[in-house]
Length: 258
Image (cartoon, rainbow, N blue to C red; front, side):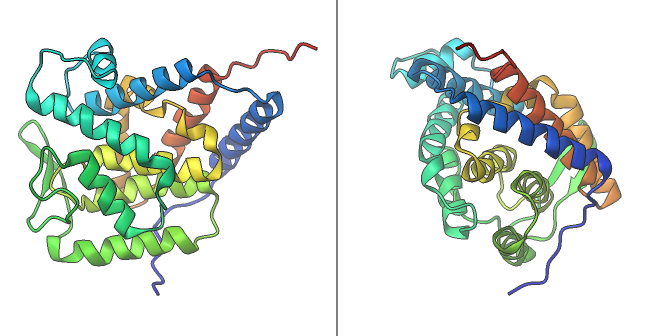
């Protein structure tokens, strides 16, 4: 048992954002919209291409589509392996328990197993995040990672905070801890989708990563700002805005016709 409490504050902006998102969810549920299998496939492809592009993968939407369809493409073996790993991970997403450290490590193994020899295992060495020649974040020592991740998972399981808030906090805290040698960014986005999907299954199909990719610079700036503040509030605000706009774009507020 842990008393760990991630540092953040619920302000009026966040309350308004949660209310707006909840209204959108209610509207969408009320319309009983059922995405077609083709739309589900397209959104999954957009999600995979976007979350990998954020990490520097150069494969296009068309190339990722071809890989999903089992076709051969020309490209670097690493980038193709990244796509194949993401396909496996996102296919398994609804079956995982977000509060299971074992499932968390299994997800990383699926995601990165063709790339990292230590996929699914917490890092044994020190890591930092660089921007050009500058180090913008030094992760906690490797020996602390199991305890930090255990505390974070335990908080996720026991916290009474709204799933919208918990998903954002977990995403940020994971990036701060940086538990793996590689793949932390895509794991943060994957696990946030899982937490949201357990709250409402429509999030399994919502390509939130597409909007993150479109605002990649601000995404990283907000992570850095949260680091400097030692508080994830600003990142919660940023991600709730991303979620709100993703819902608006995917499910426009069109009148229901009888």
